[in-house]
Image (tube, rainbow, N blue to C red; front, side, top):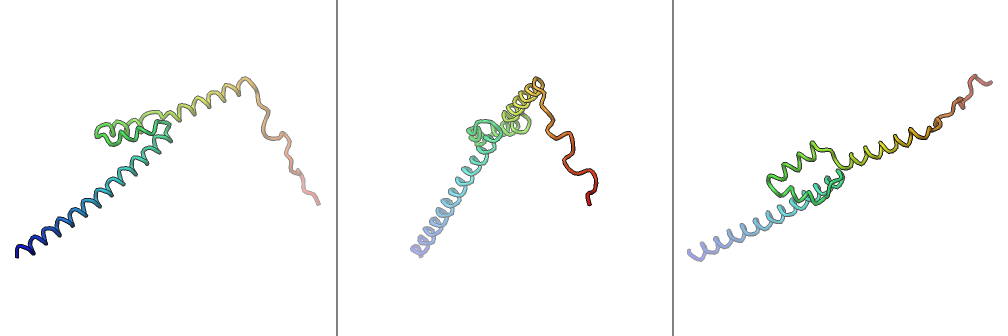
Length: 111
């Protein structure tokens, strides 16, 4: 009886060890995947992608999400500067109209 009980105990330990190993690998893969996702989000917003590592810190992740949600992104700041440059350039040089003044299609029916 003690041998069968020891064998069952070893089987349970082996099953739990395998389950823990698989769960650990899946958890690690999910953490790495979430870091890659946040890295891409921060990069597209104009921030440094390494800010995604702050998502692993418990209180800092809330602060970073608030910065993303309520702050002005650097990419939009750059876009506004470029738009202002274009507007300033457009005021100093009047541009000709882009469309022809006279219509290019026939005015009356042709038979």
